[in-house]
Amino acid sequence: MLSAAGFFGFKYFKTETKTVCLGTDTKIYDTYKDAVVLVKHKYGYFAKINGKEFQLNVEDAKEETIYGTGFFVDANGSMLTNKHVLQPWNSSDEETEKVNTTISNLRMKVASILTKDVSEDQYESFIDSNWSHASVSYDEGEGEGDYEESDEETSEPAGEEFVSSNETPADTAQASTDIAASIPVKDYVSIDEIEVYVKTINIEVALHNSDNEWLTCEIKKVSEDTNIDLGILQLADQQTPASVTNVINLDNAVDDDKSLAPGQKAIMVGYPLGMDLAQTNSGIKVQLYNGQISKESDGNTIQYSITSTHGASGAPVFNECGQLIAVNFSGVDQVQGINFGIVAKHVHAL
Image 1 (cartoon, rainbow, N blue to C red):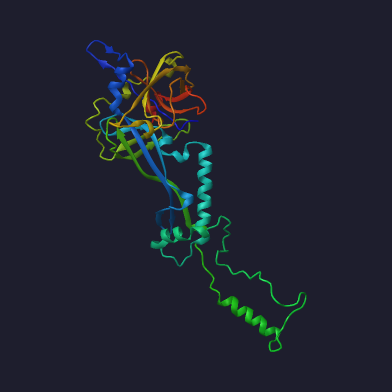
Image 2: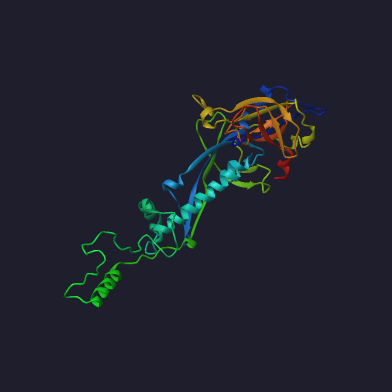
């Protein structure tokens, strides 16, 4: 499945007597292009030990950056996008299982090298410098410093016990005990005291026509329904930029998904492939793609033939009048023209 795309966007211009349909793809694009943003989300693995939190920068815990699409829905800097853009580590059962396995391995590896004599301020540097010695075969109570006898061959005859003429068996046993006692036994931090998790490092958005300028955001909410791939972002200053002259008016969204029929037009404004297509010599540019509805709504999703791919997750999908009908969220990697959006009626519930 594609990482997602999105849906959203429609607007009518009203006079005193009637509502006027935007009517053309170009008018829809011109009206809403400034409201659609490119989302950049950087996230990584963090550890918390004895209350000390720090980011893990070891080879097994690399930072990840993904791109998606969002769009402004009010004057307070609020944007709609996909849940999986805001929580990519929970984007699918496969991805969740992969992340959980990584977290489990990271905890065991940290527990295999981190000793209690390391101060909290040195946790991060100690783990970085000793990571090559870490092991997932951690067994609580047995640390890397456990003493093991040498396997080197001795010169004693096979099958015979060699005792020096000046030593008794008791002397030999005592000497072995003294040697073992002289080897320091390391006390390791318990794996139960080690918490590892994934979280956002930073999440930003770029506006259409901006020159690679990124605005800081906060994640405000995600849908608790696993079937509804929607979430809300908000600019840190809680103000929609003045350049956004038309937000996507949710009051005009098509709430009756049963009215969406195969053959009706569907228009998406978004950022497929993220920065790869968005970046131009004259700044970041949003794109328009169109198609038609391919299948009746199942109550949660609608299928359409719009060309889309990773990066367009969270993009608004409009009907021919510019009304929001869905938020693009997924597709089929193997073939173009089979993509899906969360129908607009679920936006108000979120």
